[in-house]
Image 1 (tube, helix red, strand yellow):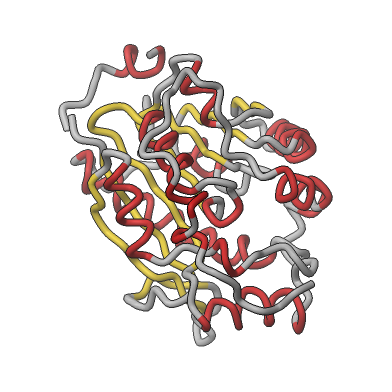
Image 2: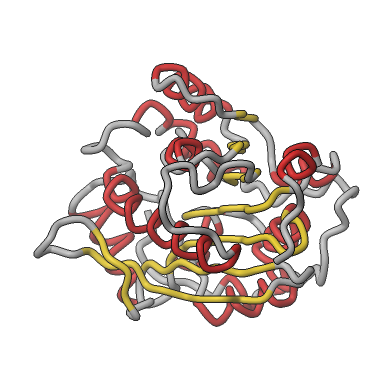
Length: 281
C-alpha cells in the first residue's frame, strides 16, 4: 500500500442452538450501508448486558478472564498482519507510530491500550457508556492518550472519519445486523488499510465451550451473554467482508494452550478465530 504521509493520515436461559443468524431474512436484508443514513447495528439487549459488566473489565480473574488470556495472541496476530501488509520493520516499540486506529466495541480498553503503547492514535468506540467511563479512567491511570467515545462506527463514518486500521474483536457476535456492521467497518477504513475481526464460529464445539462451558459450568460469564445463533462461521464472515468491498488476507484459529498457558494461533477455527482483510486502494 502506498501509505499517506503521517500528517495527512492523522487528520484525515435457553441453551439450545437455534436457526442460523446469517441465513435469516434480517441478516441478508441490506446489500450495503449508506454512510449518511444514521443506521445503527447496535443490539440494545447486548449493550445492557455489557453495561452491567463494565466494572469487571480489568479484573483478569473475572468475567473478562477469557479476553485477558486471549489478548496477547490477538495482539501478536495484529502485529504480524501490520508488518506484512504495510511492509514495516519488525523491530521497534512504536510499530504503529502515525497510524490511526478505530477499536470498535472497545469495552474497557483491553485492546486499545496496547495499540496505543505501540504508537497508534487510537479511537475506542463503544455504545455502552459505562464501558467508556471505565476505559477512560484506566487510560488516565496508565497515562495513555486514547480518544474514547460512547458512539458507534456508523456514526463516525457519517461524520466523515476514516482510519488506517479498524479492529472489531469479539464484537460481530453481538451486533443486530452482521452484513450492515461489516459494511460500516469497510466504510471506516482508508483505501489500502486493514480490518481485523475476531469472533466465534457457529459450531457445536463453540456452543459447548462458549455457552455451556463459560456460562453454565465455569460461570465466567452470566448466562445469556452469548447467543449461539448469532455466532458466525468463517465462510460467512469471509463472504460478508468481501461483499463489503474488502479482500480477506488470512484466517487463523485461536485456541487455549494448556502446556504453556495462555492461547496460541492455530489452523483450528472451530471455536475462536481471527481474520485480517484489506481495502483495495
